Length: 300
Ligand SMILES: [Zn+2]
Image 1 (tube, rainbow, N blue to C red):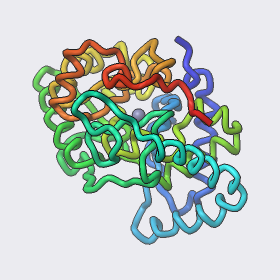
Image 2: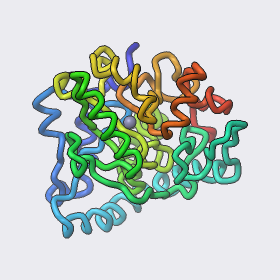
Image 3: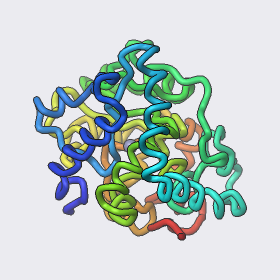
Image 4: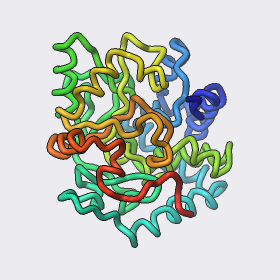
């Protein structure tokens, strides 16, 4: 399948650099761009966040500069898009007959898709921890919510025992960063184009701290690209990830349900019990498992 990611690799790459530039490149260390250049790493629909503050003082510059420079010019999108997305969601929380809380942001089984955003829309998980603090490789030094990070560590060690090395390319992204990324895409592509490429703020699973984009260090050409699905690491994950509470969130051929193209790298932690039930159910998607409606697109 040809994905938007593949067909727009170069523009996305250029655009992401531009987006990062808006925030003040001098204040930011762009972790991962070097890697991208070295490996030919393409830009995925599921935009990897490769921005990291070099120190605390530069981190504090990011927020003011982004709100000062991007909010006025993009106020139509910056203020409308997330709010418009959040409003219907807040009044219509998802429900399921299964014994899972799928509407509370901090619930490990929370449903986040193009129909249901996080409530509040700027929800931030706590605590989060960098995988590298747990001695797990994470090429961009990203974090996950602590329970997901601990589970990832268990999965990483089990894979390693089977001769498979995993790495996390992208994990937790906060609301402000997602806003910045999304608005950059809106400016370049318009809202429709942006929605094909990047989740709206509040609508990204990465904002829950429970989503991990997984890669394999030996397969650097396939980082965040569809060919990751043909690697041994992917085979291992498909067979075993549920044992550690993770599910493949955007399977091949399910775009009409999930709203996203095939992303063989994007795994979502839902907890071991729910993942076991999910695996046993044979459902193709989390939406199908929960018995909620397909969410191919935003409702506005
Ligand atoms: Zn992802």
